[in-house]
Image (tube, rainbow, N blue to C red; front, side, top):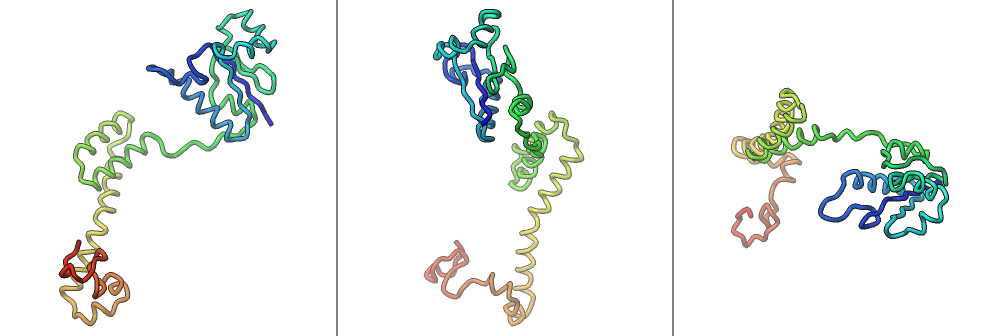
Length: 209
């Protein structure tokens, strides 16, 4: 099993992701290490303030500290070979070092998320939501054409059930009763004699919900 060792500078906790202000680089690196673990890579982290003996006992780390001081940290080793000093590597670099293939990039980008949110705002008739996500999409460089397409798609989805129930009502009110109840799909939609449309008992005087 491939093993990666991280020798961190002095931090308040094992990952540095704590306290009132958190370095986003540490958050990202902690997530990258968790991803490596999920890929079967053994991960060890050592904190200078909490595990000083691990630094003193590793010859590579000790030599780096003597040469550069804490500027040599973080120091990254893969299978006992030093790979980097003084910086937290990217996930791409970590994957390359341990021989793990990166997953394909996600299609669900920030821009796509805002287009979905615009569509949801239209579907829920939420004007503040639309304005908020329109502004965010605009800042991300989303074109008006793409936003308009999202609106049209949402409107089509929104109108579909309305058209369906109107069609059902029209059939009930304009066609002969015998023809209406002959259709299997209408039978499924017809309330049972002993209950209302929401599953209530017949004692509800036939009211719906």
